Amino acid sequence: MIPEDNRFESDPAEALPEDPGLPAGWVVDTPDGTDPATVERLTELLRGHERAGRGWAASGPGEVLVEVSERGLTMRENVVVRDPDARVRAWGSVHDRAEGRMLLVHIVDRDLDDPLADRCSDLLLEWAEAQARSVGAARGLAVQQVDTGAFADDERQHRWLSGAGFHRVRTWWQMSRSVEAAEADLVPDPARWERKGVVFRRVERQGDGMPAEADLRAVHDVLEGAFTDHFNSAEETFDEFIHRLREDPGHRWDHWWLAELVDGEGGRPEPAGALVGTVSESADGPDGSYVSYLGVLESARGRGVAKGLLRTIIADAASRGRDRVGLEVDADSPTGAEGLYTAMGWGTTYVTESWHKDVRID
Image (cartoon, rainbow, N blue to C red; front, side):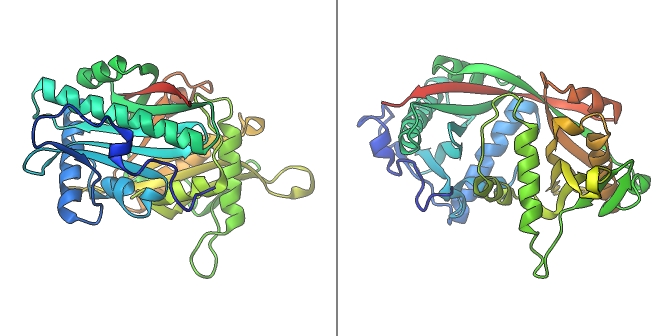
C-alpha cells in the first residue's frame, strides 16, 4: 500500500555521523523540490552524470521532479551536499519501490577533485544504508536490498559501489529502433486489431477519460505473472504499481495495451500480454516512444503476443510522427527476448548495470 507518510528518515542528521567529514562550510541537507533553481541544478548534475557515463545527456527537469516533487516524496527521500556557496555538489535519492527493494540514485559533481568527490560519495552511500534500515524496519523485514545502477563504462561509479559493499549483479542492453512513417500501417489500427485468436487493444477509457480500473488491474496481473521467473522480481501491489508509473514524465494512458486470447473455451477474452509505453520527449527533434514494460504469460508464449504488441507500439509511434522506439532488455533474459528485438530491428545503443547490497535490519 502507499503509506500516508514515507518510511524513510527525513532528517539527514539522524542518518549520518555527527561529523560528516566535509571541509569547513560544506553542509548536508534536503533539497527543496519547489525551488526552480534547485531543480535546475539537480538537472545539471544528472545530465553531467549521463554525459560522463554514456557520452550524451537525455534527462530533463521531469526526471528530477519524479524524485523531489511533493508527489514523488510519498515513496522517496532525498539528500544533497552543498559547498560554502550553497551550490549542490552531490545528490542522493532513495525510492521505496516494493517490499524488500529500495532503489538508489547516487550522483556526484564531475568537477570535484577525487578526495572530495570520494567523501561526498561515501556520505551518500552511508545515508542510503541508513535509509535502507529505516524502510526495512518499517516494512518488518530482516534484510533490505539496495538496488542502484551504473553505466557500464563509468569506472568511478564502479569503484565507489564496490568499495561500499555493492555487487554487480546484472547487465542491461539499452536498445533503440528507428521508425519510418510507412510503418503506421504495420497493424490495421493500434487502438484495436486481431490476429489468429489474439486481440491487441488499448486499455479502455471511461467517460471522464480515465482508464477502466479492470483493464489496469489486468495489466498489473499480467506483468506480475510474466516476470515471476525474471531476475530480482519483487511483488509490487497494484497501488504501488499505478502510483509509480504515473510518476514517469513520459506517462500517457493511451500508451497502455492489452493482448487477449479470444479463441478459448466460451470465447471470453483472457488477458495474456501487456505493454506499457511512454513518450521519450526530445528538445531538438521528433519525440520517441519507449517500451517501459512488455510481458507475456507463460501459458500464451509462442502465439506471437510479444511480437504483436511490439508491432502495435511501432505503428502507434509512426502514426504520431515519432522516429524511434526504445526499450531495455536483460542481457541474461530467461525468455531470450533479445533475439526477438534484434530480429525486429532493435540495436544496442549503450549498456547499464545493476548493483545490489543487502542491508541487515537491526
